[in-house]
Length: 160
Image (cartoon, rainbow, N blue to C red; front, side, top):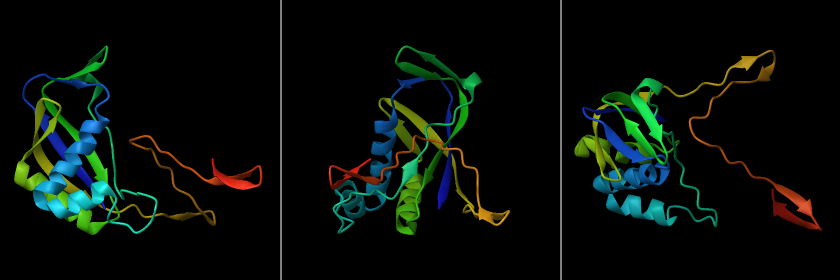
């Protein structure tokens, strides 16, 4: 499931250019507002019995039009207006708790700045189509993607 969250500011706000940690913290705070046990288990990796600690969600950077942001040194100034933030998870329970938190809080905080939540939309699932007998689809990632596999090195499988 995919969420499109529309945020707004009425005055100029300044946030660190590297604000991803704050976005992640915001997600856990929203979940905790709705269900503290779920948020804690997800954060601590206790929702899985696997040694890998998948979080089962991803999120974009803020999707701010270039005309609405000014970057200087390590600060991004966001000019008045609306912009979007996307969060995705295949886990319905995660999305339900997140939406409940969004509706309850009505704003999110990035460091010292608060942004009003204007709208929360559930976007349709992406449907893969069959083209020329091959499954192919073009995607544009809204945040960095990390992929690992294992390769044999000196007789052992190692991460690559």
